[in-house]
Length: 79
Image (cartoon, rainbow, N blue to C red; front, side):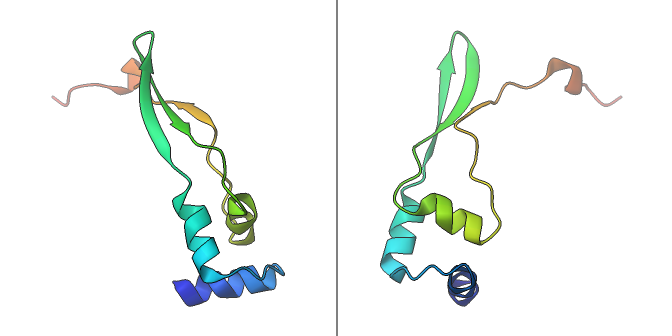
């Protein structure tokens, strides 16, 4: 996995120390919160070169805020 990631970064012209890559990716966090009885997942800001690293491997950064409420129309019992 490390070699594949380093290869993708090199193809994108990024020359970052491996410890910085790991640190930037590890800094991306998500927390779940409840506000007005609704559940959300909120991510942190993208630290350092995290956006560029994700883009280099073809991954879109997660949205800043996502509703994690279940759609009641999707919930049903199997009979």
